[in-house]
Length: 311
Ligand SMILES: NC(=O)c1ccc[n+]([C@@H]2O[C@H](COP(=O)([O-])OP(=O)(O)OC[C@H]3O[C@@H](n4cnc5c(N)ncnc54)[C@H](OP(=O)(O)O)[C@@H]3O)[C@@H](O)[C@H]2O)c1
Image (cartoon, rainbow, N blue to C red; front, side, top):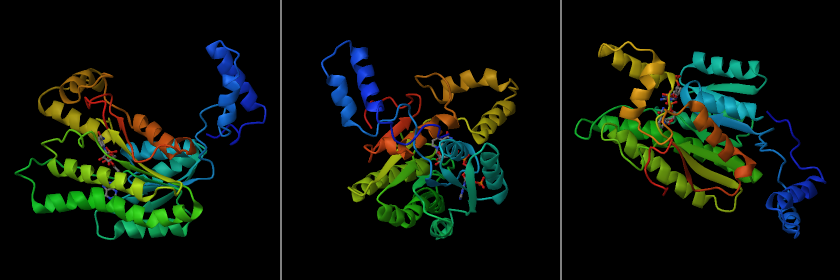
């Protein structure tokens, strides 16, 4: 929630500079110089999203819902999108109950032209400053099981849906000289999952296209980045794991199951499964004016499951 003014008070620079000099134990004016350099530096990490309007696809549940809540908490008006209207309206109502601002839009993004229709409808209600292309359904197929239809539908829902939204949302951002596009990738991009072959490949295409988009948007004030989740505990994923355990005769509580699932299914450096809020925090930061100098990047939020320091 926005609780601090957008711009620092006139004496903030001096105080920030003094604080830096105190911290490094010197009085050579370096702190003053640093403070003078960044006249936007707020006293706290206020994400400055007041007055921005954001469309988050697939935000009626899972990770998208957490992103919608986080952006709203930070002051943005959020358009909650889902395929079904019931859950979308529930998330939007919960945002308003918590003091935020929300709207809803409904579309099945796997249908041809649906992304364009969705964005056109959302633009009729106001500008889109922030586009979070989060919707990205997956299905499990191995290489020699996946049919042409599986490949086509995965690319439609994961790639073309995002591309369609971007195509229509970006021109308005260009006119205003500011905007944010964040696509949601997966750890399956750098390390393809053999049991999710077409999904891994579709997300790789989306990640690559986001990099090309960032270059296309050079100098426009619009950034384009990818957030790449590891294994994130949504309701859907929890149900999948508990059902599998139950089918194997294991009826332990989730708190007992999770450590074992983490070790066997998602061994990572933090030692737990991710939470939707972990992803939401990263997305909100990239959506903020504070992330002005980050574009064309992939931010891995995966607990270190991807064993590389490289992008
Ligand atoms: N969870 C993970 O571990 C994980 C890991 C890596 C990457 N990701 C990525 O993170 C993103 C969010 O994942 P999630 O786990 O939160 O997914 P999720 O729980 O399956 O997402 C559900 C949301 O997506 C919407 N949705 C699903 N299919 C849609 C379609 N065809 N058209 C429009 N909306 C659709 C749902 O709307 P309805 O409820 O109305 O259908 C709902 O709002 C996805 O891009 C996913 O690939 C997730």
